[in-house]
Image (cartoon, rainbow, N blue to C red):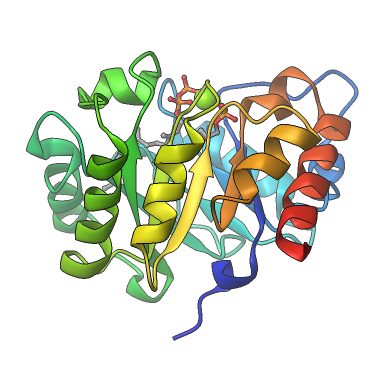
Length: 235
Ligand SMILES: CC(C)=CCC/C(C)=C/CC/C(C)=C/CC/C(C)=C/COP(=O)(O)OP(=O)(O)O
Ligand SMILES: O=P(O)(O)OC[C@@H](O)CO
Ligand SMILES: [Mg+2]
């Protein structure tokens, strides 16, 4: 089966709770050259804030995916290409593995054809996502590889996401996840801030995800990371 992300090198994650740099617009964001925009954040996201971003980006060509942090922020919009639904494989309890998902399916009428799965392995203990989910981030490269394999082989996850949100990760651990996968696509996110860091992590993953850089430095900096990722994969 082919998936849209099979051809992606770069995803830009827009946090609906954070502002763009002053003077920058969603048109600029959509013209960075990124392959897709993922809309989501851990803290203080609401359906209203989600809607504002989706509506602002709707008229441009770049694929738009919502990444909800809980069932209450999922929005129904024809502008969305789909939903990327996290499961935190190393969460401290079952709520972020199956509990939130069960509640969502209970209360909502899902569009299964547009609903896709992401197996998160959360690696930065300082990140909001690690604290919220009480993730066990004390993982060796072998642990990370094993989680990746479990996600792909036992839980049929389409995407495995090594998440270092806020800090640049350990390339050995990211590479271990990459080597462990046959079919699933490896996303890497965390601390990518320029051409070099994008180029380096793209060499060890299928897709790099860039987040805070957009809100902190702006679209020109993001464009450099797109080049870094594409060059790594063209090389
Ligand atoms: C079942 C449904 C619809 C939702 C549950 C989905 C799950 C399990 C969410 C838990 C993990 C989570 C909160 C994912 C959101 C995406 C994410 C990791 C965003 C990055 O967050 P940070 O960068 O840590 O947070 P801030 O930037 O908000 O501080
Ligand atoms: O904000 P950064 O550190 O770029 O991380 C990107 C993404 O993996 C966050 O979910
Ligand atoms: Mg963040």
